[in-house]
Image 1 (tube, rainbow, N blue to C red):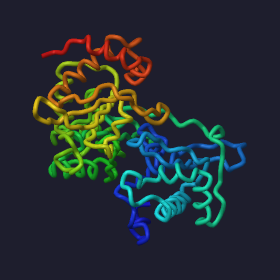
Image 2 (tube, rainbow, N blue to C red):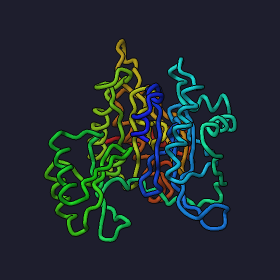
Image 3 (tube, one colour):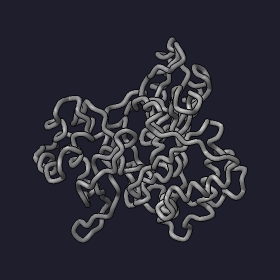
Length: 379
């Protein structure tokens, strides 16, 4: 798809954001349900009117910054059909989508205006044949996503091989580290590196016999293949350091938050924390367990960097747009606020297995305020 777009001049006029994702149905999600076009690999067994095998289902219109996930089209595609169909979708959007209002220059708004039936009619006119459709109920369920499966050592399907998920602190690596990771992949793997939506990288195809050597090389680079429950799910957009729209230094605040919490809270359950700098929501704050969007906060006669805090977001099988819990929290008070939230969660969850998102979803906002504000912070 990448090379197709590069070679088609009429596709160069896309808006600043138009997202296409392919999810292979593995333990790490590509968050395809938050994209303009999302392809999700599924398996179909015998007896449903199509040959048994692995296909992609196509969803359209995801944009979580505008409170929407992809909606299933019912379309079932063989892998080699996806590029042509995606190109047809893009061309219909270019021809008919809104391009004068930046806030509405996304596929969702054309779908809202037209409806899916009309939109798919226009897509199929650009294709040589009618698209195959199959009810979702006839497709096998997607294997479960491992929330922090992008960190650490995990076995691959190929016997005797594993991939290693390496933490890149809020998505940043030095030149030395990047060269070092590439060298590890060449020496011990297949030469491939893979990036994830969680701002880290994977080194695949490592023989199990070489895992100790790989971990040592990673440590020598000042990196790690393990992380706390806070740092493993920490995502931050570019922020004020590199984006004119951002209202706060999100990467700086994310690292400060991780350092602070790791020294004070022994969190035994995965929690994803997303910090985004503006309403464009590049860090997808609405789908984090805890999501934050930067804002300017009045502090006396001054304006300081701060955040609105959301909770209860999710994706995939736990799809949900987070709800606002706190507004106008100065960045200087953010660490203590999140500490109270995590302490309140651990003190009042049903048991050690209850995830943070389940916990906040079963409490009203006022109840969460009471539980969290009663917690004491460690000074």
